[in-house]
Image 1 (cartoon, rainbow, N blue to C red):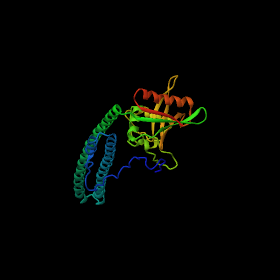
Image 2 (image 1 turned 180 degrees about the vertical axis):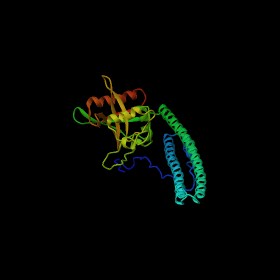
Image 3 (image 1 turned 60 degrees about the horizontal axis):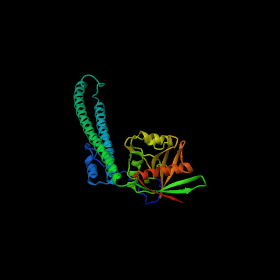
Image 4 (image 1 turned 60 degrees about the vertical axis):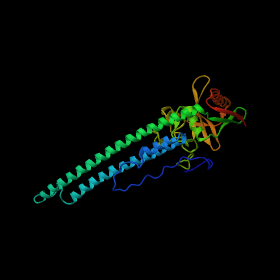
Length: 319
């Protein structure tokens, strides 16, 4: 992984190794299952603990899916092996007649009995899998509801505070920076500007990339985003945001829409760049950071309106 920001920037923890299991033992689910994550969720009233519980639940769910898949594959392999053993013993239906008929009958009884036991075992695994999936989905729903409620309650008693920094580039152009915010503020700001929560607590500060030749992707491969769809262009990114209901799999930026005087709106983003977030505007398929005077003033005016409404704290500094 490549990292472009200072080492003190908190990174999203990598998923730990999946729990080991003895191959002869049937899988019955995670050692703690959803209960462990929900216990963590209810123990503390912080945003970080809610996200930690959500991450633990995702890991347990992924492990559960893989282990049930392995168990079904093991049973299928066992069935194939038994059939092959019967055929290898020369007792299949294609064998010789005569004395072999008795062998074929015995083999058929043996095979039918084995297949019945395997079918019963497969049905039992499928039932446990369905019950496990239902518990996980109920837990996911509780985590989301709790997280959304917690974010809303946080916003009622605290405001994200932004410091807007103006950097002139000639007489009519400028670059806007926003001083770095804390992780809690990043989550609250994302919800305040989009009415959706990010899918990870450290989303804004994650600058990892799967390809050294490429900048960090703007999306995580989660929340229905495929692994090959994490790098959409600017219009595609906006479509992902519009299609999301409660959760945004954002990575490294916060989106916001700023109205135009004559109608419509522009798509801006606050892109994390070390000690600051750089304001960029969608321009065709890409984003640009050098803004016109009108664009800079409109973005500053939008944030000022949020301050006057009592939704954020704001300082504006000219450099």
